[in-house]
Amino acid sequence: MPQPSDPAADNAAAQVIEQTLVKVSGAPANAEQNALHNRVVDAWRRRHGQGSPKPILTLVGGYAGSGKTEFSRFLSDITGWAFLDKDSITRAMVERLLVSLGGDPHDRHTELYLREVRPLEYRCLMETAFDNLKVGTSAILAAPFIAELADPAWISRLTNRYAAKGIDVAVVWVRCDVESMREYIEFRGAPRDGWKLKNWETYTSGLQTDTSPETAHITVDNRLGAAISLADQTRETLKRILA
Image 1 (cartoon, helix red, strand yellow):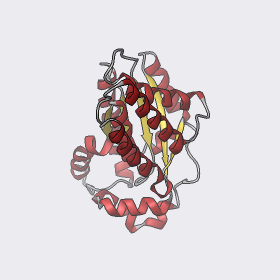
Image 2 (cartoon, rainbow, N blue to C red):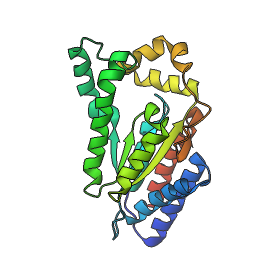
Image 3 (cartoon, helix red, strand yellow):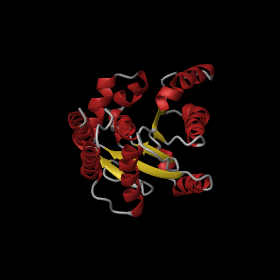
């Protein structure tokens, strides 16, 4: 993103960002949602100014193809917070480990992956985030977080553990319709999605696309790609304002 050239442009950019957040996730309906909105806008204002607020860990979860990675990149563009994608950080390790265990490197659904590999995958992601947070760098994590966000106790433990270290935690769920998710999954053509596409009805029968986890502070509505389209439009608007 371009840097603000003057206070008026900075304020105009901040208003565009705030309006986009309201459009994609609705007007703040609780304290956590309002706090994250404020932190995103504040990060924009502080990015090239003075002051360093305490770091925040933002978990961005959602089903495969929901748009969580794109929305995470958008947040990172605005705030300057570190963007950590699970697949980018762990995919090579996961594939090699699965092969060494006698499995399919692209497996993401069998008991072998779920029991032996997935816990290590998420541990690597969380520890990478903490390395950033403990030196004061806020982090955005893009991963499904399906099991984690379904467990209020897991979120409570994470929140309490990080609060003791002066770190805030926010949870974002990216909601999307099944048809749009399939379109995106087919477009990216990742081998790890092969089983999903071959067994689409079986895979989608277990998805709860009409609701969000109770642990989510904010739900971003990306049905029909609406939120990602707004994010792209916002980037272009900011470029024009700050040109």
